[in-house]
Length: 187
Image (cartoon, rainbow, N blue to C red; front, side, top):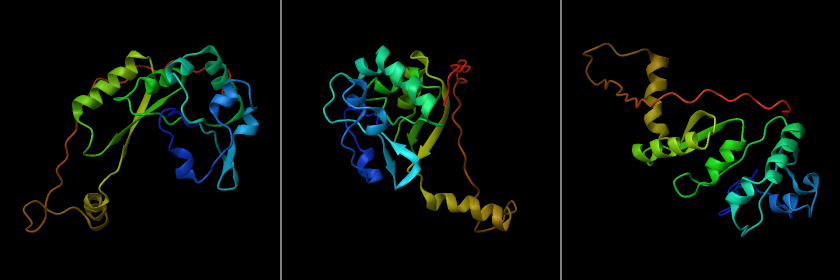
């Protein structure tokens, strides 16, 4: 589901162009099954877009109508994934995260500053979102090849010339909050 009601990008990335979207469904102008489209011609992946220029996304995400909509999605689909705008820019993601069963925090490698990441995590916790993990994207694959070669060819012995030892840093944060019990009706 396109959850970034301010700057939609998923339809173009997925190569689909639905006529209706989430606002049409929430306002009762169109049925959900008329608004979702199959992605890639396969019926195992469905997409619900958002119309352009939807006012007040936070009000929409915190409405009872949206909560009922999410409950109906739970009953209809095995998994429901919402894409949201960045936490640093808008509160939309935190509000939507409080409705979802789980939230993945997506972090761009070598782009997000540690203090911004901590602030984003705190924003999700304050909204009572269940942060279930982190996804690191835009990773430097060339740097990662070293580790694959390391395990395929065996670890270099200490003191061998020409071998750089991997440098690993690990930032620790307080543990994620305990998950809230899942609602009885899930898809």
